[in-house]
Length: 153
Image 1: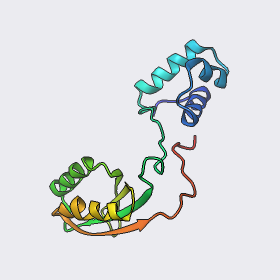
Image 2: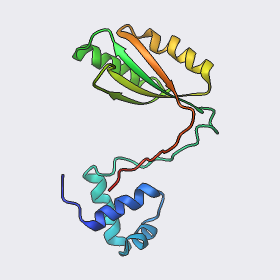
Image 3: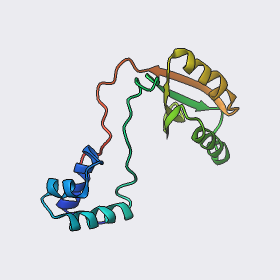
C-alpha cells in the first residue's frame, strides 16, 4: 500500500459520503484549492484506491424490496467447479453480491427480488439449474438496521 497522507484520507472520507461533489466542493471540504485536489483524486483513482463511483438506488421504489442472504454449499469443490459456479453467478442479475466463504457453506449470495414468489422462481429456475449445487439456506431480511457503503478510515 502506498502511503496516504491525512489529506488523501480526508478526500476519500468525503467522497465516500458524497461522490457527486464537484472538484471545487471537494476542495472546500478538505481546505485546499481545486487543482491539487483534482490531481490527488486522479492519483487515488489511478492507484486503485477509488474503484468506481456509483449511485445508491432505493430497492423498494424499484420493486426489489425483498433482500435475501443465501448460503450455498457445493457438492464438491475444486478450481474448475468453483470457476464454473462464479462464472454463472456473474450473469444472474438478482445476485448483487457473492462471497466465497469458509465454514459450512462455500458461498454467500446477496439477492434482491420483488417478493417471495420471485425469489422462489429465482431458486428454482436459476440456482436450481447449477448442477454442482448441493444445498442452500436462505435468510430473509426483515429490516435493514445499518447499511454503510464506506470503509472506516
